[in-house]
Image 1: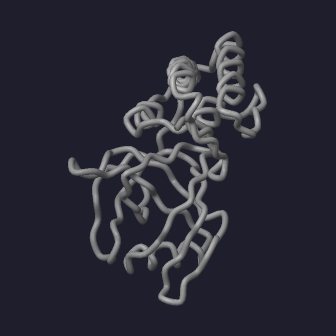
Image 2: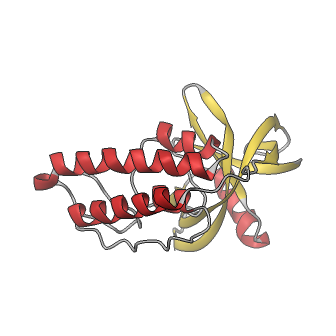
Length: 203
């Protein structure tokens, strides 16, 4: 069990996923500044009107995209290991909490499921005109790699984050990709095409 600085946001960060963040609140400028100085990670947890969720993702700052004269900054972060939030702690200007790792069961995805997921992702890329790279079939935590490259609702990403079976996650990802393809087909004529954030945009 370790104490981790937390950044509650209305988004879910998956392991291996990269997202840009705009840091403007003083307390989170302090948190990110400490992470930049030390090289440590912070915890990104989904938060909404119902509060913080009990599962999140360790995040590391991979790049500082811009610094403003007033202290605000734009950064790029990458998701690492998952954690379970046991309790919030006090003493800092930003949220902190006691966390433990979320470990996967030894339940790898089936080869046919991996093949199906990669085929669906490739079809989605073609439909949307995306130039996002197709991951390798043997990529570590391939379910997260694929899901992190498609815009998905937070509720779906939270389910993936909580799932400790790669076999189960890959099945979920296949279903999500099927739905994404159906959506892309419905809006194909007017769909926006963007890959600036490294993910397939569905419109």
